[in-house]
Amino acid sequence: MKIAVIKQLEYYLGFKEYNVRFKEYNLRFKEYNVRFKEYNVRFKEYNLRFKEYNLRFKEYNVRFKEYNLRFKEYNLRFKEYNLRFKEYNLRFKEYNLRFKEYNLRFKEYNLRFKEYNLRFKEYNLRFK
Image (tube, one colour):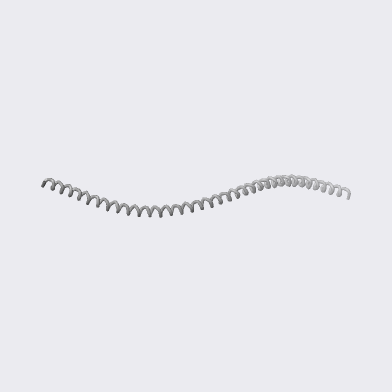
């Protein structure tokens, strides 16, 4: 009987040790639970922040798309203007060439008239 009591005491002490260990484990898990709840709160805050950032970046993306469209429009306008100015430049070059031709003609005419003037002066001197 003493052996049975001793065995029961051993089992009882063994269960007490297990009970103490399980209580320690329980405390640890409660601490872990508290930590994980804190982490959960932090991650929710981070999630909210990232959602805000995501919204901001979406707004920025929309703005930049609008700006991109504007600049594309401006680019097209400036290309049109550039083409117009190239056309004008070609016209003015043509006009310049024409005027140079006219200037040469007038110089020729001027030389002819000078020749005629000299002839008439000679004639005038002969007939005096």
